[in-house]
Length: 280
Image 1 (cartoon, rainbow, N blue to C red):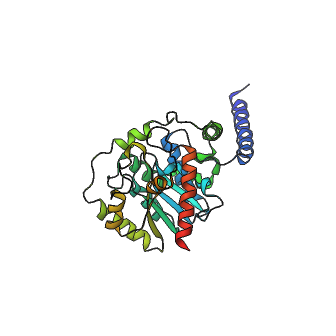
Image 2: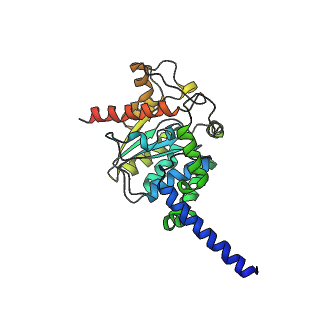
Image 3: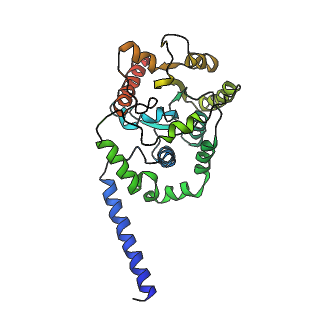
């Protein structure tokens, strides 16, 4: 076979496979998890910027990243997006909120790592939204992170894996966040400016404190960083760690820090229910 004919056959086969995969992936539940930190973050960012605008969004780190949008279906917070970024800083999520032309009604801002300055991972995420890749994904949905065969397979395996307390597959998430150790003494001024910019567009910002395993305060009723952040920023705090202790709800973790799927699902429902009751 001459090279020109061989190239043509390869292109035809590639086109057939792409069309076939487009049909198959549409019949599968949308992936909400990915096999690497970068692809997981890319998936969340693309969904935030390219999907029809969600009314509510969780902004934070990989801790809040466990509260998948599907967990809120059928609740008062059903239209939920997630910008809980693996190895990321809540400041980056706020910047992404401002990057979308249509502002959300509600932002739940996770307090975990709020005092830390952004790192290299955060710059990588900001570069993503300015780069060619996002423009291509906007025009060709098949190139999006949640359309990748490896991501679809990973999400399917995670969905069908028995719940347990084994090691988190993406163990470098905790390492990436733990590597950012130096607190920024000007954190409240920095975050406060972003919060005011978000609020200026008509969005309400609520602080969110989640259980964080080994980093949980010894006394859930004592004043903690969430309380301090609430006072400094002038924002309401929803402390799901304190509420889970008060209700006797057992919280489980995959690696001593990140919530298991079952615990994350229950806390998502608790967040929606508590918000609904307090808004009446």
